[in-house]
Image 1 (cartoon, rainbow over the protein chains, first blue to last red):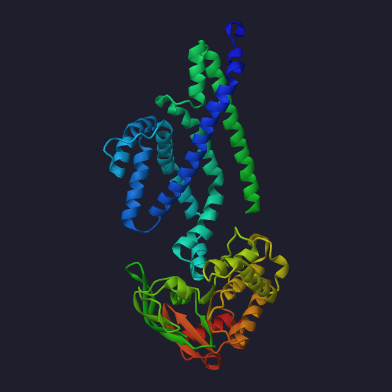
Image 2 (cartoon, chains in turn orange, purple; image 1 turned 135 degrees about the vertical axis):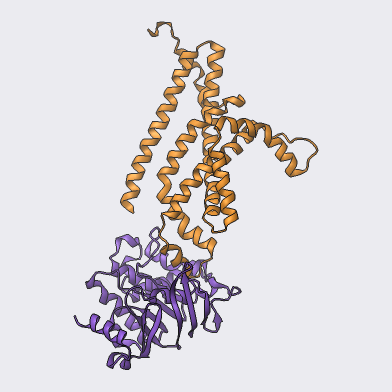
Length: 230
Length: 243
């Protein structure tokens, strides 16, 4: 049944697919995860801060982001970020940020909502005695968080954070709505150019599946190792 | 050194955890706080370094009012060591790192200085060989000794102990008490919440008996064990000393 298919199109475009497309996807995934975890941790700290107003703002933000489809947010940000930039810098015209920056900001903001819930659970999993002990040593709130609570919360939540990153890896393919050359976008371009839609989309699926599956497996291994250490 | 004056504390709007508590601990004095569970003794000791807030009264630590919003609490807490019932070592750090963290981040000591001090204190509590292990690899008694060393690493002017042996298996209690007895004999100012009456007899100067949030009895050790004045203290003593 594969007689009519030309799988050689994959071999011919491997360089473009991986060196450009996959490199883009992985960069976007990595930077988004990093930014999302940092920003998400800040949101989690706001929610747990005990300052009602801060907590409320953070809670609204999380609910808001989690109630919107990601594609919509990507679109929105793409058109909105230049104007927000203009407003922030006081420039006379909308600043041009480029599709990559726009996508990166979107993913960081969007994923932060999810990462923040993970970090919140992680922070809450630390017994109250730990910050008490840190305080008793004379540590400030910031020191307590930085040296005692967050390292433990992060460690406890690492498998979940990585699993969420795998989801993020797949979600980055949505940047196709901004016609960006991520892995799927690259595959799609080749597919259209050479008229080999089935082959390319099949290949793209296999690649996403393989990477995600391997990563999930690695996370499970890691989880088992962490639980022994603890 | 520690002055507690007419302290009232409530949990929530209705439950009063401390009722008009007044006492003090002089420099070099060892005061044991005992009483049935729920009597407020742990709460009282946590109020001393403001791990728990109080609503009324005042607590003065080395001349500084603890419950003054203007007080630099971290700075004040750094000068008082505290040992917890459940040790509360930092599980993600090695033993020696547990001893260095406060020294370096709070007191600003150099890493080498902190390590040297930490090693010395570990040696003192007999755990030098475990310096590079993680807390989970140590027994409860060993962990608690590390916790004491961690507090001592800050060169505290006083030490607070919150039921330091309550979470330990019986055979590990004495190794922790031995360290505490040594400390008391060296003249450390100590406030100790404990049921270990043997420890109280050996080194305490005074014994405070609490019940239902009140300081029922505050007496010199010999008076307390000789003939406690209150019925409640007598009952309590007969219960825990009978076996």
